[in-house]
Length: 178
Image (cartoon, rainbow, N blue to C red):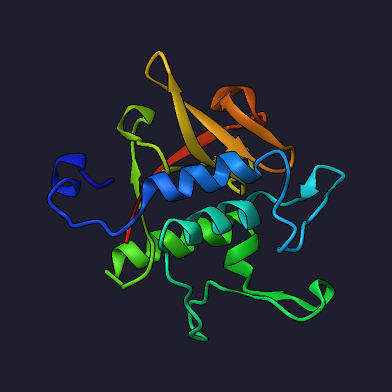
């Protein structure tokens, strides 16, 4: 784990307020400029697509390299939009952010902390099941009595307590820096 005291020393180009404002705007009514991924039998869904849009709104640059990509490309017809796996899949987004931090790459980075108390607006919470699979992502958009409130897709929600979202085996609290 990374110690929060060291995090404060790093400059951060992440525009937390822009990311949170985007989340609050589109949590219940998805942005029509992006493909929406419906939840099918408690699998797939739009959570990481939504979180990726929030990160982009917060100044996270897309990464088009072939080794570790994170991007979304709009087509003239939304049905032909394309995207990287890390843009839309929770565990891929989690590892993309963590590896960027470990390698100090010039893209959005995720620093995992041990407690939700270290999170700020615009940080992320990932949900892991008993099989060890990270299956859901959400963005911190508020606080109530010191506990993070999240906004998410699949299912759509605004400012709910993160522990009232999906049943989970483990939470991953991830601070975002750029």
